[in-house]
Length: 72
Image (cartoon, rainbow, N blue to C red; front, side):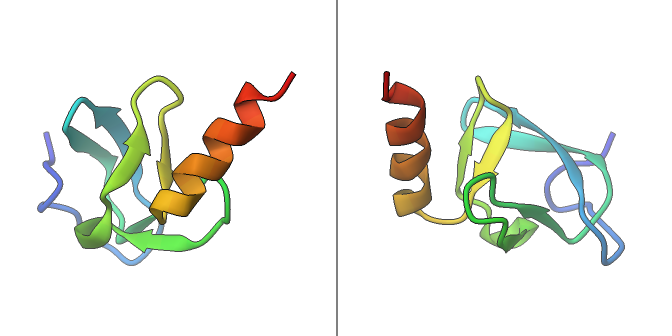
């Protein structure tokens, strides 16, 4: 099993988002923001949703996703 510091390669990683941590399932250097599509290097990954299993580049992206899904 790989941990968040054990990734290798230059492509997109496959990640399982957990409460307060994440697990690298398939090695890579980054994940994509679910809102903006921006590349997020794994060492900079700070924001994600366990329920949606998606990453966010910034706190603003988190708020935007929450706002989009909370709308009627």
